[in-house]
Amino acid sequence: MDIQSHATLSPLATVREAIARSEKIAGRPAGSTTLIAISKTKPADAIEALIGEGQMVFGENRVQEAALKFPDLRARYPQLQLHMVGQLQSNKADEAVALFDCIHSLDRMSLAKALASAMDKAGKRVPCFVQVNIGEEEQKGGCAIADLPQFLADVRAMGLPVIGLMAVPPANVEPSPYFALLAKLVRDHGLDQLSMGMSGDYETAVRIGATHVRIGSALFGAR
Ligand SMILES: *Cc1c(COP(=O)(O)O)cnc(C)c1O
Image (tube, rainbow, N blue to C red; front, top):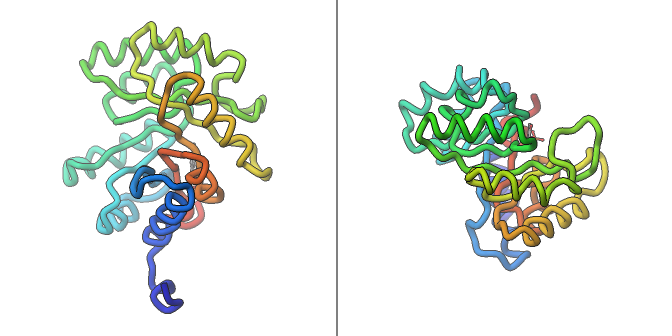
């Protein structure tokens, strides 16, 4: 690609191209990574601008904010998909099940119980990623690595649709060892979906096997 046409690429096109390049480098099929545009704090018109470029998968980190922005957008764009990527309180489980197509932050038994009961009530199965505290950081959400085998067994026994693992590596350190560890945990537990990689590190994540990257500022600008 020549420099001039590169200069005219939109942020979305630039990210798509970088994902495609990383898939190719890793020997992965083109299109095997789902780009989730994280629209937290961004207004509906910024979201619609991306929809205009064909982006249909979005993510939010707060139930309340998603409930304000997305019902109207969904009415106009029925093919939209909405992912929950933030910490979820158990008392918001009903609302989350109603609003979201996928939940990336299942990390404790109380939430698993609330989600299972919300899904039963709604008659809707919402695929979930189990979030892992991959850097063993005290302040971060996520199931402890040591607790993961038991937690997965428990949530599977409850019938929750667990499709993969999600993590946010520690800030300001090389993320690839954490991505590789998450990929190994996914394989070890017979899962196949990997939610990892944000604006600063998604190319690395795709090379290590991310099936879902969660990208905000590289698409929408700084928050
Ligand atoms: C905000 C957020 C992102 C996107 O972060 P950027 O650095 O803006 O790409 C991804 N994952 C989670 C869980 C987030 O909260």
